[in-house]
Image (cartoon, one colour):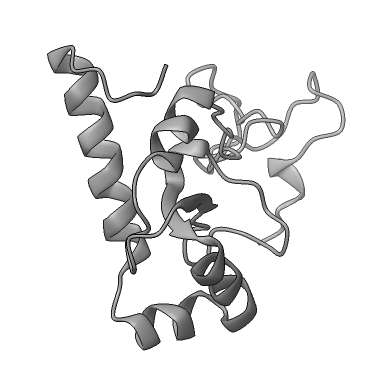
Length: 138
């Protein structure tokens, strides 16, 4: 069966409906081709959250950290920028090691799940904001 009737160049042209009928039905509108089924993720920036992360100890050794952005598995390409809410505190040494080794090898070598750590810090931050606790973010 030809799919030509699904994608008409002239929207007023009459032809087969998507349901297979020889008539067009208004209730069977054609989807807007500009709307994506899976929208592109929005990168959220929050300087207060980054400041909060940078005031925590490194999750591996307790040293002064840098904010490491955790790119979700399968969710990014090289150089992809992710939300600030996907940060974990890693010291400079561990931050560089994570980038040099790659996430999978780094997590295996250090027995750490960066997704889980990221969620734990986000929960800590949101919970403290909700309770009115000053986390030193400001």
